[in-house]
Structures are given as structure tokens and as C-alpha cells.
Image 1: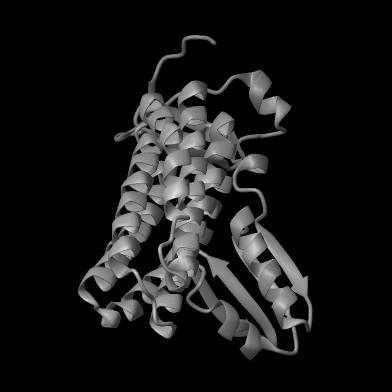
Image 2: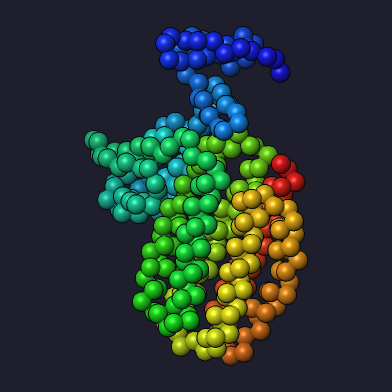
Length: 297
């Protein structure tokens, strides 16, 4: 570490010189692009070779499912542009259209081109917070559906699950492209993102089962899910606020709550209660990530 002074560049800008050794190490020169990540407390400067991983990639496949998986994988890895050569352009577009935030689709000369224009300055915590807000809304609607017999709310729950899928891909992309700022926290964020997605899927399954099956013990289901909802809220707040004490408190409550979710009084509610039990496990994983995040920080 060394002290360097800010200098004026032109009328309205400021600058700072870069160490000669660092510039030469990364084979940079005058005019070379660098990536500047401005945070509240610091600025991170990255050489061009490390500024976003994959820039442009090509896919050749007539297997629609494989092409779709590859597109999603490259999107998450941070590619800026993806070209797809396939005989089934329409089918691929149908599979991915609307699923990946910031993607602009076009076709040129029989090649499907995807340009990704997501923002570079997205805060990782806020990206994950957006996922949680969607899960929270799904959970709240599910409780209303059970308590007030509002089956009409199911459609909104399923719509939010589609939104959660988009946020899931976007959050993974955000982590992959920006984790250089906090590399030690990579695993904690990935665990939390994936478990929030699992929670959304569990609520989706519980909703579908509730709609298509005559479920008994509705009051018991409601009370149990309300406790699970609080458990999830506490787990995520521990992660977002980097609160090790709250994370440990959540983990200590896990065992008893899991037992309670499995004490279904009537067989008709067993499948729904199984989803409640799964959510307890997912929330506990988030609490473990919260504790890990706190310790690392």
C-alpha cells in the first residue's frame, strides 16, 4: 500500500496515477480499457482481462434444450453477447424470451444474437434483496389463500414465481461479475440465492397441490406456515444485516420447527406440510450462510 494524491484532469474530472508495475503486469498501455467499480467506501480498478469474464461466445446446436441451457449458463457467467446457430431459432426464443433480464434478442443472417445490457453497478446485496422481496410476497399471498380461501390468489403466486426465476438468473450473474469486490463471500451469496429459489419452488408446489387436491386441516397448515414464514424472515434478515447472533438463534430453532411441520393431523395435508418442512431446511441453509458471512467479514 502506498499513498497517492488526486490530481485534476481537465475542467471537471479528477484522476490518480496507476503503479507502473501493475500496468506492466497486466500488459496494459495508454488507451487500454479498465473497469472501475465505485462503492461507497472504495473504488476497485480491474484490468481489461478481468472486467467481466466472457465477452462474446458462440453456440452451435440443433438441440433446443441444450441450446437453452448453454444460453442460461453463459448469461450467468457474465457474457455480454451470445450468438446461437441453430435450425430452431423460434423454439429457442420461446424458451428464453422474458426469462433473462437485460437480454435483447435479434436475428441476423439466420443467427440468433443475444446482447446483454444489465447494469454493471448493481449492488450484490440489493440483487439478493430483490429475490427475497419476491419470495416474501409469494409467502404472504399463500397465507392469505389458505386463511381466507382465496384460490384466486394462486395465479399471482405463480406469476411471482416466474419473476423469481428471472431474478435468480440475474442475481447469479451479478455475483459472478461483481464478486471480485468480496471474493471471500462468494459461497455465502450463492447458497442464499439458490435457497431463495428453492423456497419459491416449494411455495409454488404447495400452491398447486392446494388447488388440485382437497386439503384437510387448513387451520393447522396456516399456523404452521406462518411460523415457517417468520423463520425464513429471521434467517434472511440475519444474512442481509450480517447478524451472527440472529443466525445462531434461527439455527437453534430449526429442529423443533421441522418436527412440528411433520406432525400432520390428517393425511390430506401431508404433501403441503412436506413443503413447509423443506422451507425450514432452506431457511436454515440461509442462516448458516449468514453466520459464515458474519464470521468472514
